[in-house]
Amino acid sequence: MKTTISESRLLVVSDVHLGNRLFRARQPFIEFLKYALEHRFSLCINGDGVDIMQTSIMQISRDLAASTILLQKFVRQGLKVYYVVGNHDIVLEHFLDDWEIIRVVPFLNVVSGDSRIRIEHGHLYDDMFVRFPRIYEALTLLGGLALRIHPRVYHALDRSKEFLLSLRRSAKATVEGNEADFIPGEAPAFRDAAERVSRRGFDYVIFGHTHKIGSARIGKAAMYLNTGSWMFRPHYVEIVDGDVDLKPVVSRDAGLVRESWTTLMEREAGRG
Amino acid sequence: MRSPTDYEETYDPGDIIVREGDESREMFVIQEGEVVVTKEVGGEDIEFARLGRGSFFGEMSLLESMPRNATVRAAIKTKLLVIKPGSLLLTIRRDPTFAFEMLQHMSRRIRDIDERLVELMTSGKMPKEMSDRIERLRATSEYRTLDGVDE
Image (cartoon, rainbow over all chains, first blue to last red):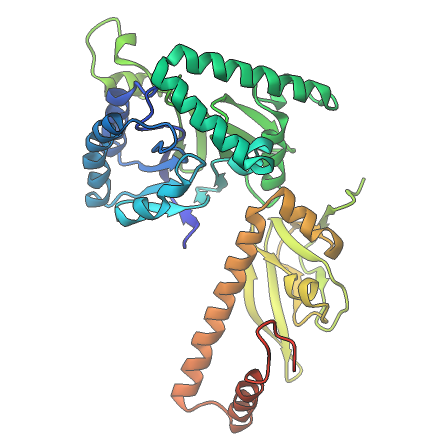
């Protein structure tokens, strides 16, 4: 298994959750893949790309059919698609590997320009997932059930979980540091884990899993980034020759005039 | 202040980090810089590896409590993360992928050695003393239990 790679142009997304009823960004995701192909970026899906825990067969078929054709194009054009396994797709590992269009890995060490970048889903640092795996799985399945009733039921359940977790966090020791050192709403454990990993000679550490978008300083010169989730506010990380940027995926609706999605993306990226 | 589990050290070019035969037990992760690994053969230092950022070394002495089998020098200004034997498990618990990367590293090393060995054996360039030793090792391994303890 090759986990250390060299890429000069790479886009990273996480928690796309293809197949989840809350994933509504099918068209933006397709446009995003087209954009990556057009600009010759390799792609890294950093965990929970396909959601088997809270899926609907109808939706997963539609979502996958549309994306698979484009993912095959990456391989035909000599670009790579890496898939870092997350907690919603662990059971799919062999299935994903058998596609033969993606490289399934537990994490990625990327050498780009002068930078060393670690890409990992981040679920290993989720206290709940590691310490209480059965409760975590039960809650995830309960979330899937809530989704079948109505997305609002799911959100209410999610908010209660967040509230309980925040109570638990505030009961623990207060965290030192200023705002730039943390991603808002995210448990400090993830930033701490990123810092520990960065001490092994990484300039950037990229996680997903928490669905909290943002970046934070770690150590003396490293950065921690989280790409959030495509179920809520699609973001991605762009890596070009060692430069790493966290960017929002602009919606076609955001354009005041009828412009192509690629034009909007380019303008957003400062290239238009 | 040094952390109870690990700490950082900086070396200037040419500084010796570990010396062949030393009894030290720490392992090292290269945070910045580059190191040269050499081994004394017939009174001469032979360079057999250069390691860069993210690589690690010294894990054999840590795992087996054996003397260092090579000398490692800083090639340029080098910053290292030093992991002590007593804190390896804690490091792995906090950073579990580190264990995965250590296994990957050691598996790669075994594969390299196997390939070199096969190359030597098939080329007929292997000294008789060495091939006899391999035969002896092969014979001994049959008398080992699965957990590597001699019966």
